[in-house]
Length: 102
Image (cartoon, rainbow, N blue to C red; front, side, top):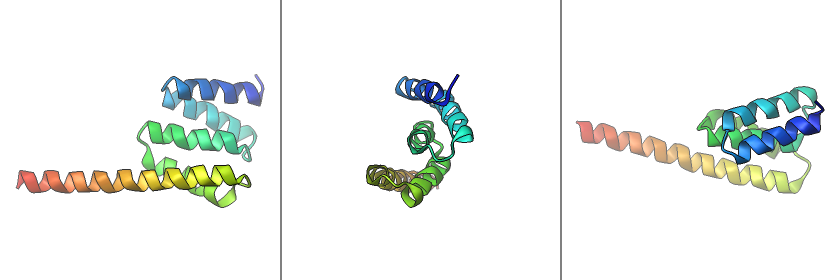
C-alpha cells in the first residue's frame, strides 16, 4: 500500500469518527514522510476528536511553526484557539465541581 492510500484510509476513518484508527494511519504516513502536512493536520484533528488535547496541541503548534501553506497555518491557529478554550472550560468545570462538593 502506498502513502497516498494510507492517507486516504486515515481520512475515511476520520470522517467516520474513528479517530484512534485515523491517528494510526496518519502516523504511518508521517513515518514515511514527516513533511506531509495534510496528514499532520488530520492527525491533530484526530487527536482533538478523541480528546487527546495535549497531543493535538503539539501537532497544531508544529503546523503553525513549520507549515509553508498559509491555509494550514490558519487552520492550526484556529484549532489551537479552540483547544485553549476547551482546556479553560475543563478547568473551570473542575473548579466548580470542587466548590460544589465542599
